[in-house]
Length: 366
Image (cartoon, rainbow, N blue to C red; front, side, top):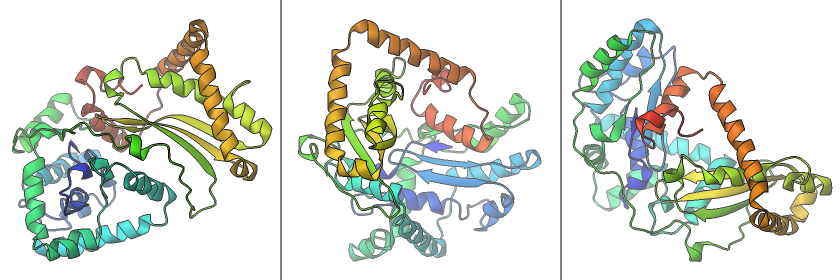
């Protein structure tokens, strides 16, 4: 189940509320009030959830004989969760522990840094994980009851029209449809509207042209050149950014990476959309550096811009060749896509259903 709300919708006074609510849905419903009911039922299988900037995704896998029972418990998350006071206090500490664990994760640290450096007028700037201060101490200081805030957030954003569901099973499609209709019809449609931005970009001129140095936790050496763009989601059929990714990420003779390797500066290079939202995107060139590359990162950055100039000056016939190569590879990748585990496949599909028309849910990202 993908719900079209994430931490960008958090109240300004309670960062992390959407993520906290995600945790709370696992801890009892009116039909199954035992806080451990759902987890015990799925104890031998996988279940999880994640809260991103703009959506929250819940998923599980279970043996075929137990699918209906799991769906019954799962559906109640979106019908009648309890948000008990005891669970609220306890789970707040679990969120705080999750946030503390992220302190030693370089990817998480870089993600939070990118948010902290973003335009404060855009909700991407918000701190999304939450901790004891943002969910406990600060609301208390402001006279806010965190359980009441959870209930209000749930009532405001968790609506049938903001949800997309995928069920994967060996049963007949008519049976699966019957189960879903029976179990999920009680989910209320409140006709909520998705979060709409007011025209601000997370990285406007005051947030651009900056050089940031980061001390990693692990032994990492990387040069990341990022370029803010308008959204590219409305161009999913043509994907112009894919051509740029293909050209910049090419590893053969005459490529950026070949040059950097010859200089002893880099081990690998990737290029592509690193942030993809309905109102903005970010194109990033990430280069895994050697020690020599760290010492010469500015020369490398200059080389990247020279290479971009070459691409811009390339004749149309040359760019058309790259286009057809990229198109052929994308077609092969789609036709011979590796089979995924169902738990990952359904999560991927529900996210796609929030972005693409139904007839392009599978092919849209390819």
